[in-house]
Length: 395
Image 1 (cartoon, one colour):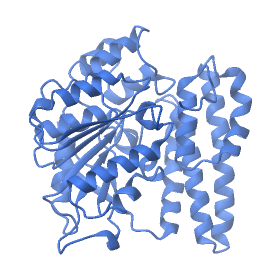
Image 2 (cartoon, helix red, strand yellow; image 1 turned 30 degrees about the vertical axis):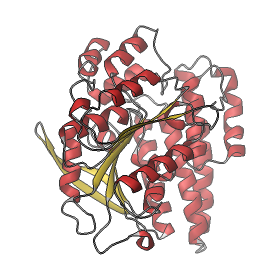
Image 3 (cartoon, one colour; image 1 turned 90 degrees about the vertical axis):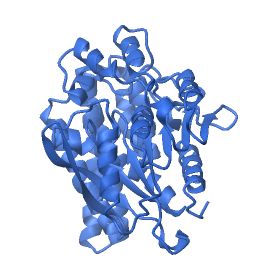
Image 4 (cartoon, one colour; image 1 turned 45 degrees about the horizontal axis):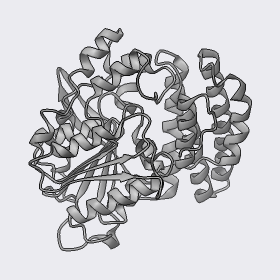
């Protein structure tokens, strides 16, 4: 089970655990969050303002220490502290309302310290732009390209690549900090961590809204990767976390250049999930201002308009059309998405040559939504599966 620092506030508890999974220090987290316990149950504007203030305090401290290391030429230490600051700023931003200026300010600050941290690592990360056009938007999608470790690449040709989509409220920087790209790289697979419409930088700084036809941004990502000489264009797969459990099977059903699909948490019918949440009978929420967040993501203005969008987000048409190997990873105790949705996705993937469901149980851990209670288990399993399917040669 997930450690619930706030037993009366699931979104806050999950965010705290996500921060720790991405590199936060537990003792610092406890220091910041202890004063919030009396207000957690209210989860109102004042409480979420206090949440922001406490996490900002941690971020600013870590950034100050990083600056000192950087000035003294201690590049590796500075990198670690900048990346930890990015975790704290990211977590501070998570519970802000979309129209609050402090949200974008915090987000931009996170991007800045994240980049400083990655650059001082001296690693192989490349900031790239994926050309993208849809409904008059002639722009690009921001992404991080993380190449396969050179020592793991087998054969004469370039390695395969996984396109990794976010969820409803996760961004590419979190996936990097949680070690997703590094796990694939160690198994001979490159990764394109991309902020697609509705999330991350695409939403916050470019105003690109989410829509059901995720094969369109997925196709743009494939188009981009096909231009890279360091990617095997015949071995491009796709993965996605949380709402990515809808994004990826939907894309794979219509974008047949994808050679595998990984749904990390399976949302088979987002309309059903959303209706339950709106009427108060549904599953747990991932962020405090959930309905307001949904309007921001979809560009809608009411619960009715949200429903018009999400009622189109089911996999009834897409999944029977998937022709590549499909992996669905789910937690037995997922409190956001019922296990039966994962089972339905696999059951209906009748054209997939290899449709597999991995359910994490209490015996092994990782039973919560997207294994937030033990994320490494899921990352390791998915990376091993992709290495097998894409024949990267290293597991």
